Length: 489
Image (cartoon, rainbow, N blue to C red):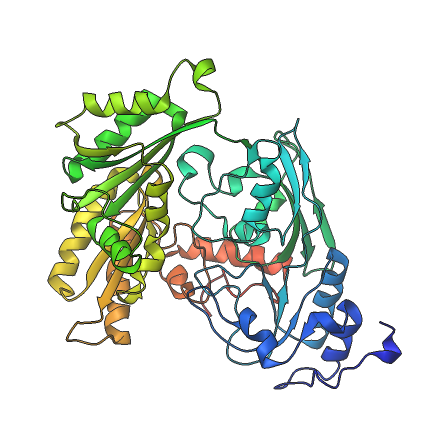
């Protein structure tokens, strides 16, 4: 649209936004891709679980060049900018605050073609492509990007948060599968940093792309990536296993790794309360152990192989069944075999189901997996002593030491939720995780406004100082990202 025909009358200038901002945003991306009305902005202002605010404008560029112009404009006018992918994050890193003075830059139009190099086993993809769309495209070549999640994030968002998921033990997180990156920099404003290589071996100095992995959009806006992709499994085997006790869980994991090696793709712990929540929220799901009661704790195990039964000379499900028989009564008290998709449906329904049980107080934590049993026992004992009215719904990735240690303040509890008690609980859990067990307060959700205070509480002063120097070097005006990784100010 020519500049002299641009209609900015509907865009206004909410709050104290620069008076030229609306006109310039429209000039860069077109009127239809700049939102100022409340109804149009709403879905960009509310996070998946946390984070809700007011955007001054929402702008939807379609290229690195447009992103560069918008970024330079925001720097010139002193306007804070938030890059947003699919907005599925859980730490409020991609949602605006309440001021109405921030511009939300949605990257959903950065789709373009997914370029698959079958021989190199890579995919070149725009930051706005979703995980589901990527895997649908890859399936035509019998490939996949095996980050297994309950959400459908964008590629750029997965890189910015370094997403893990249920199959990390086999495939690693996003960082381990990222080969190349294109980033629009804050300094110089709008400059494109081209790190788009499909090389697995490239030992030529600093691996600069890692500066933008897991840092929540600080320093640069991810626009494209080269991803390592993997062959689709040709056979899988699953079982829902009841261990003989908590002490058997790690012994069983070690035995499975010793027997099956890289065939082990998932080892997920699930507590009884989680299954009860799914049954309560989803009437179509029945107790998988019926007519027996639900056990106190269970493990969802998956093996997979890219070789066929004939080539491998082994049927994975038969091999898993035989393994469990060998360890029956020693490590295994009960097992449901060959559950396949139905068992994973239960697993992926947990997060949504427990939200309906009361006020959710979520913890995304990790400890060395050798400490998981001890941590869980000590955390439960602490809760029983200090917060007996709360209920634990824990599940997660025992094979990589991760756990969604989710706690619910039940609707029926006589004492009603209050901020002081919740903060006291958070400090108690995180102190136990980080200071007693050498763990992480954020295993895979990243750091955002929701949990930034814990970054400053638990991260060593020397680490914060160095991180702040790096962040200031690549973004001197701190225009990108919502977290300051330097010492608390």
